[in-house]
Length: 325
Image (cartoon, rainbow, N blue to C red; front, side, top):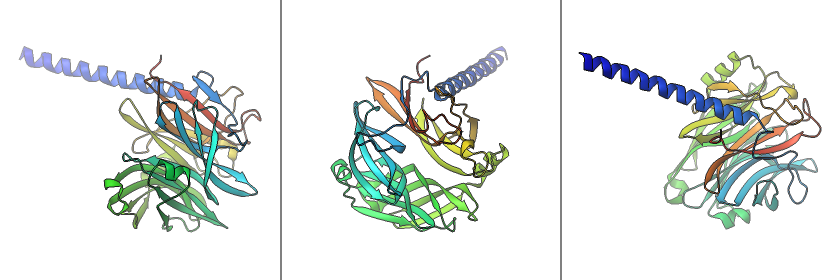
């Protein structure tokens, strides 16, 4: 009897200790995500070597010291997706333009060296999601895609976009044996952006549905504007998302960033601090990199003109190491 009670007490102690440890780790992650001035490195109003803006930059790492990014820039009234490279994450060299009338790109490097690109494709008064498949890195740099798929809208009458990859299954790099899970937004009733998920099977069959539970949870937090871009990351074997949310419709100074769980449910609205007290943040992207063997996170946010310092408005990139105390 005594032994049984001792085991129960031990289990309760371990559970409490584990819960406290997880809470402490989460609090620390939130703290470092919120503080740009305390990050290891940062750059505001990011531009490439051609002095083009690098809006909504998504970074991935090929090897230590070799970073690749996809972003978009507005030229002559037309958005174009640009591929760039960097050795230090702060200085970027333009490589190629991947598509025009295109923006909000996200990229997925496959285990076998191929690449999937998902982005918004636009036409007058409409936008939709386009995917492109590149057989290898050289093909990506040359903008030479092997396959393309335009996803027909099924939820929003005029707009679906800001795609991000949730998971990719690609047998032997064969699109005919693939499952691609995306998260995206749709323009609900042509009134407001809301979140949704979809799956593309074998690069030819698409099904999608609204993320009603997530949308309702965000609405309960008081947000009534658009719910849009998001990006997934792994830290300490836990999956999280950064999610943009507009507190009030048509108010660009009301964009905020949520930290959510793997299923997209809100954990906390981040209180991000910058050097000049900007308040509005959108289009989050976040990627893990290795730096001298240390795992770090590269965070990128777009800071609109509204509500933000003229010295900071534009593309922000900062690097954090949540393992440091």
